[in-house]
Length: 313
Image (cartoon, rainbow, N blue to C red; front, side, top):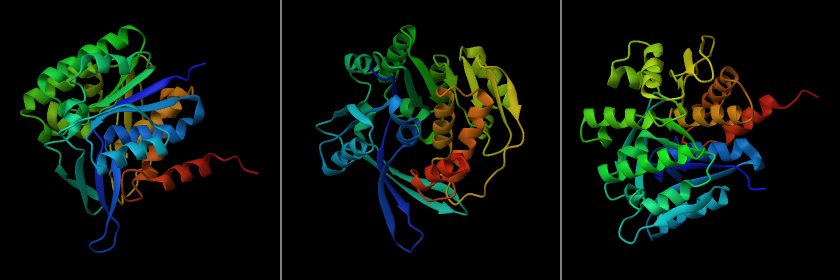
């Protein structure tokens, strides 16, 4: 029997992160949708397939990404090769645990990941879940963005569930209006939207988390879970409505991948049958562990979660 597939769609890049020692940097492969795929692969075990869809070049760093996916058990079938462009690069700088990024991605091959409609439809065919973010759509040309929306709509009509994290990054957009319109157009196709309240308040003017939920539900989203930087959270839609007020925040070492890991923790619990409240707590627990370490992909965080879940003997 074929295992259900989660296909994560987006841009992965070479990541340079600080080690904590002067002038020493660690090289890795990361990116918001890849981060979530990586955590999902480790959380879900063997009952699910986790795949990644993107585009890379022909060089050594692009091959490094493909090797990384294979070694981590993430299906790279739908990562295509570009003859002219290469994989992008970013560096993380930290100040008091908060991150800032420097990017080298103008010629990233991933910008062409949705240029081929047939390949896109083929990748989505039979998927149980398609996962993407605001960065996924931000890096695409307008025509390719439309191609992706059409493919997602077609996939959803045949049973694929669409999961969307708006992950607002204004610098990637030509205007704030285009960003807002494109985010809402994608959310309208989604069964689950996972926004961050600080971004939604800043760029959409939402006065509280309930306003964020109401706006996305009014567009056609099936369910909305609003992240809130480790603070109280709200959810609403097809899986019920509620809020969680007793989440314990964590002083971060590095907030890179905080939201990506939350999404993975939430989705893994939800796919294993947890209700929304339990899934939120699972996502929060993983994210708390992740931000206690440097970098996007933190094996120690998963080990800590596994130890917490181990029955007492």
